[in-house]
Amino acid sequence: MIFRQLYDAASSTYTYVLGCTKSGEAVIIDPVFEQFTRDTALLQELGLRLKYVFDTHVHADHVTAAWRLKQATGARIVVSVGCNVTEADEALNDGDVITFGSCALEARATPGHTAGCMTYMTREQDMAFTGDCLLIRGAGRTDFQGGDVHAMWQSIREKIFSLPDTCLIYPGHDYNGRTVSTVAEEKRFNPRIGGDAREEDFAGYMRNLSLPHPKLLDIAVPANLHAGKPTFDATVPEPAWAPIVTTFGGIPEIETDWVARHIKDITLLDVRTTKEFTGDLGHVSSAILIPLDELRNRLKEVPRDKPVVTLCQSGRRSAMALQILKAGGVDKVANAQGGMLAWLKSGLPFVVR
Image 1: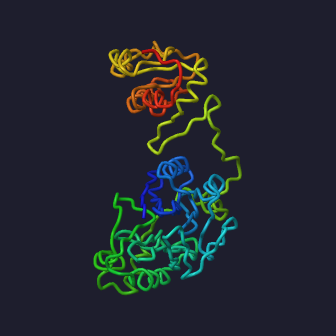
Image 2: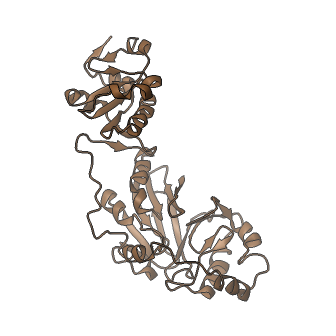
Image 3: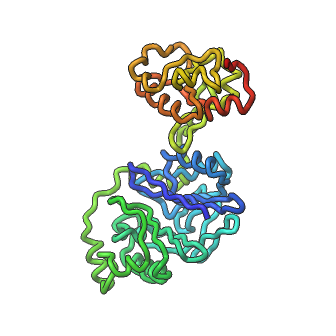
């Protein structure tokens, strides 16, 4: 199974992508609205087809990207029946199983943080995605949004701590950079509910957390009751000048065949060395040569009257050139995907050797 753990720094939220290596079907757990482009780029690069979008509960600290992902990919939105999310395609009950390819996730109702919290575990019970119920050396707050400290005690003790000791715990958040734990670790070391803690110990600890409410509470909860469907047009407009695709690494790229067809409408900036420019691969006839090592000192030589497309041998150095140009105030800029190697492989014209 393909597995990726992603992070949103603004809300300290973990997002998880799981994919079947055989079928290419995938699910995503707890996606963040602002990370839509990152997540869709990753799915595309890994060759995965999104089948389901899971949320572990109705979040109060960020807006989910579930609705955006459904619109973009056709995936189905899945949440607990207790969440009462109007745009959900499937409302899960305790014990329900969702399959994607040869993989599966089982839903375990783990209320306490909210009434609709779910933990999702793999069929093999070797991974559990606990949302805001059990955290690494902690537990989700229970002081608002229908929280119940006694329900959380039962959820953790009966639904999560009953999993195999080796089962990996992947939480919805961590504010200290920790990424994963195990059932055995949390049973032993969790300061709120581990060791010899009794229910009254846990309840006393949780009732005295005295935490401020999340900053986005009044925005996130209403939005997430509609799976993150915005009340405004959330479509991110594509750049008008080119069909640009932003990679998982954050690089806006454009295919070389488009560049060749629109060669008169752009400035093509080749950032290889002079020796490479006149070497075996040759160069595009209209390209301007400014080697990457010199670019920062020669930014004024880059024309600003047309969009700029950066080019090198393979598309790696030109990606760095793109970042230098952006920092220098060039807004309409993209990287030629695959560089001169892709240009020659496609048999595109305008090559001078």
